[in-house]
Image (tube, rainbow, N blue to C red; front, side):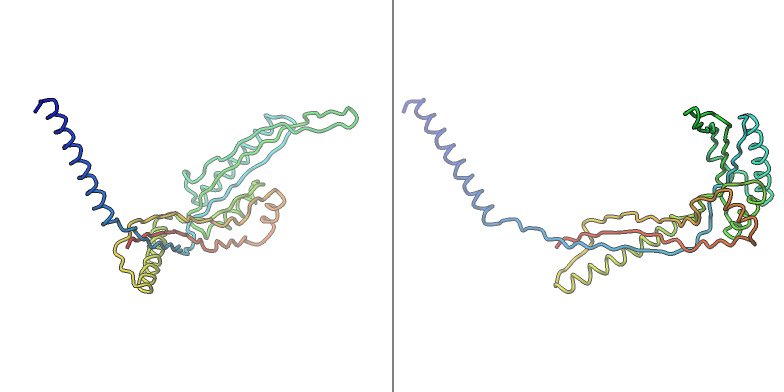
Length: 247
């Protein structure tokens, strides 16, 4: 037999065998299809209610004068007095910081000339004060109100260690989610093990704001009234968890 013919026959046989092997492989896969994986998903939220132990308050002094320099000087003198007062109330120096300092012109409109004139300058100096004894909040408000502070705003409450309570809320959320999964699996006769996915979402918390703003009239009311009583209420710290099981 011619060598060339022999080579062609050999190649044909190799191709035929590989095709047959491929056919057997396809048949085998068709006879053992992969099962579709089913899932059971649950989610839950955990909450912890806690009394605040820290308060933040903004205290400011606003002064106005025809002279910018005079307005700044008056403001500085009043603010210096307030800062000393805060230290006398045992507010630590790191807990007193400037949050705003602005100087801007005050304009008056002339109907006769149809234009505005600068008639003075206004200076606003605001401190953010951290109060680590909630019982002192009312005392601080009364004290600064009677000592030239004419702006009190954004009183808000929080906790010094929020992570501690968040982890408690997260533990509650996880326990609830697992209980849901166990109940559903029992109801439908499903066997589940450890979750295939665990997703945690921070719910956070919204500290209450007692006063969003207090102008000079409100501060005067504080000063004239009996000792100011402040109610901090409770904070609700939330955490959410979702679990995914396969079966």
